[in-house]
Amino acid sequence: MKVLLLGLLGLAALPAGAQGTRAELDCTPTRTEHVYDCVIRLARGGAALTGVELSIGADMPSMPMAHNIKPVKAKPGKKPGDYEARLDLEMAGEWAVKLRLSGPVRDQLVLHYEFDDKGARPAVRRSGTSPRR
View 1: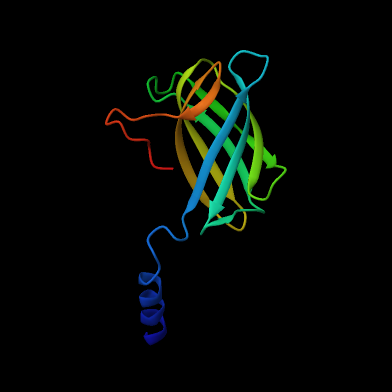
View 2: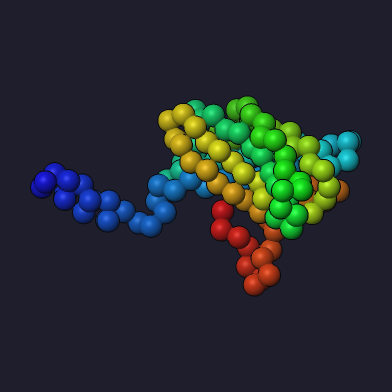
């Protein structure tokens, strides 16, 4: 019981989000309309997150169930913490990009990004703030 309590007290001393997984997308359009080559940068606890298996899918929040992209597996990128995947979307607009991590770290993240002919950027919420990543 004492060990468990001490362990819980130790966790409480950690800064909020210190061990949370963070993700960022960098997507560039290909020559095919609505197809993007993406680099997904993953970090956890301030360090690049390597050695995970990552699948990436997407759906369009403005049209639930109508536009849902089947997840694809990302492969390790050129830098530690980078993963690469090709997203074949059905149209431009805001997409909820779903990242599912497995292996030594299991996590799921949803990033809202706006896709167009220039690439992708974080979507801005109606309140004027960017969504939490």
